[in-house]
Amino acid sequence: MSAILREGNEGDIGAIMEVMVRAFDPAYGEAWSAGQCLGMLSLPGVWLSFAEESGHTAGFALSRLLIDEAELLLLAVDPDARGHGVGRALIERTVAIAAGKGAHRLLLEVRDDNPALELYRGAGFGEIGRRRDYYHGADGTTRDALTLARPIDMDRPVALSTAR
Image (cartoon, rainbow, N blue to C red; front, top):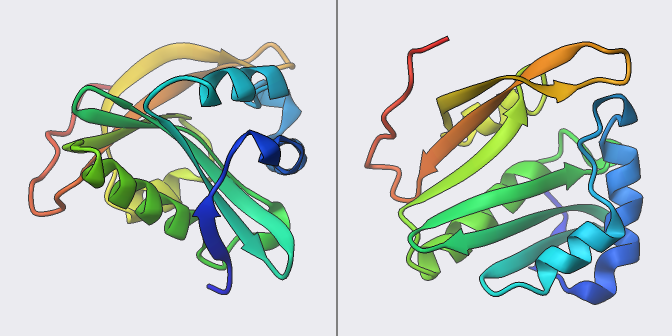
C-alpha cells in the first residue's frame, strides 16, 4: 500500500464527505452527514484516521473508545483506492490506537450484504450479534445489521455467535 496514514481532525471534513459520497451507496442510507461527523469528532475518546494516496484522500476511519472497548464507527475507502490495502491499513491503525487507549476488543456494525464483510473477516472480525431488519433501503427492502468484534490481542479469540 502506498497510502500515507495520519491522524485526522475537523479540518478534514470536506475530504471526509467527498469519500463518504463516493464510498457509500445512497440506497442504504449508511452515510453520515458532515454535522454528524463533526459532532462525533467533538466528543472525548473519538479519533479519526486518515489515508492519503498520491495527494488524494484514499479513505478514513472514525472510531471511539467506550471504557475498555473501541468501536469502529465508520470506515470508508474511495472506490478508486479499493483493493490496495487502504481499508486493512486503516483497521490496523485503529487497532493500534485502541490498544494504546486500553481497549481489549474492537467492535463494528455492518449491513449483512456489504462487500466489506470480506475485509472485516480477513482482519480478524467475527460475528457476535445480529439486528434483524435494521437497515431500510430506498427500495423498501430491509437488511440485517451484523455486530462484529475483533480482539485487540489476536491471541485471544472472540466468542462468536452461532444464532441466525
